[in-house]
Image (cartoon, rainbow, N blue to C red; front, side, top):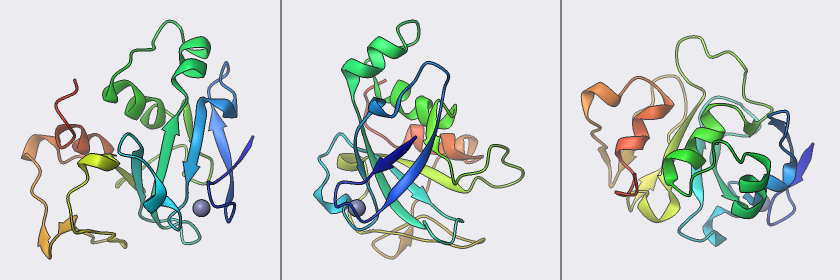
Length: 155
Ligand SMILES: [Zn+2]
C-alpha cells in the first residue's frame, strides 16, 4: 500500500490494520510539503530513519475511517493519534517493535505545534521551541504518547 505525499516527492509504504485501506489517509505531507497542510493535520516527527527524518503530516479521511473502523472510531484527536500509534495506519519504514526509544513522536495537530518548533533528530534530541526545550509533564515523557498532553483540549 503506497501513498504519495501532497507534493509528489515522496511515495511511502503504509502498514495498515486488516480492514484498512490507504484511503484512510486523505492527504499525506512529507517534510517538504508539510507547510502546506491545514491545522487539523496530525504531525509526526520521524527521528531515526535516515531517509525519512523530519516532520510528516497526516490528514485522515474521517468518512473512510468511520467506515473501516466502525467499532473504534470517534471524531477526536486521541483516536486519530491512536490509529498511528497502535499501528493501524503507520509508515512502514518505522519498526514494528520499539525497544528503548521511539523512532518518532507525535507532536499533535499542526495548529497546536508550538511556534518556532525545530525539528530535532538524533539519539539525544530534545524537543525545542524558540531555542528552549519544550517541557512536557513528567509522567507523560515515556514515549510517543507524551504529546497527547500537549495537544489541544479536544479529548
Ligand atoms: Zn511532499
